[in-house]
Image 1 (cartoon, rainbow, N blue to C red):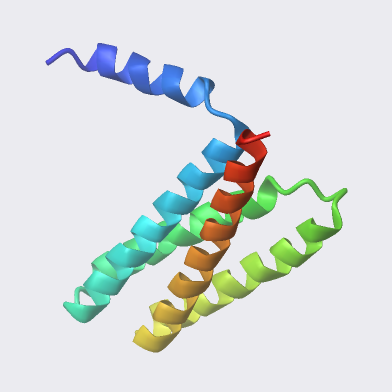
Image 2 (image 1 turned 30 degrees about the horizontal axis):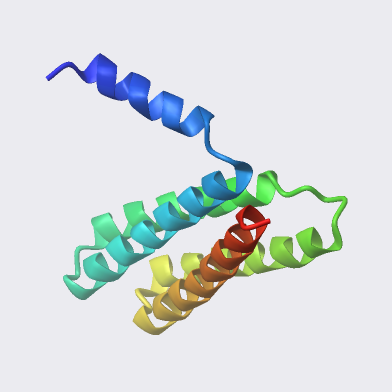
Length: 124
């Protein structure tokens, strides 16, 4: 299989996405990493848990770095992202399944909110 063609297709797909679609893609990847962390924690595979939490945290940092600070909602999101990172550090250190589930639920709710906003934006 020619991987160059696939790579080109992926790049073209990313280049034609709207900002909302890219944001949802990031949130989907974040949810994937949190799910992987959950599975690793249940299996007591702690190195895999740490890798997944680190990748999730990196996504959250990227989301925070790309906030447009001219909007009031950005300050609220920045605080939420900081909270997520803090809780994920606690998950990583304490192997806390309850905290991980809570962060994952909150991220999922935020993703669903952005999905609804994107949907209503494209319907216009």
